[in-house]
Length: 112
Image (cartoon, rainbow, N blue to C red; front, side, top):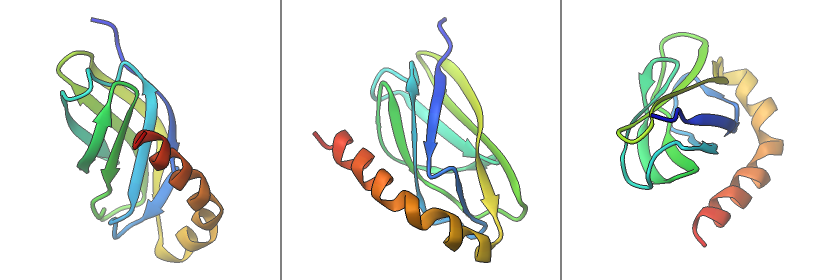
């Protein structure tokens, strides 16, 4: 089995209370429909959309600051990254505003 590779996570941080969209980009993440779970800081995220090289999720709330991304698919198994961090609420507003345009661009690309 060829392992999946996570190349980028947009945005790379989010608030402790969750509810933000997170786009995970890479290769061999799944076959387009078999990604069955995504964990952010060991907390299950809700899968919104997926294909072979990306998955969009809604982050769930976390009780602690931490980092890590795990994507599991039947085809490629586990893919790991440390590219996402839960942060206290005040910090997140300062660091995500410049990333909104980039995330919108990625979402538009996925919809094509």
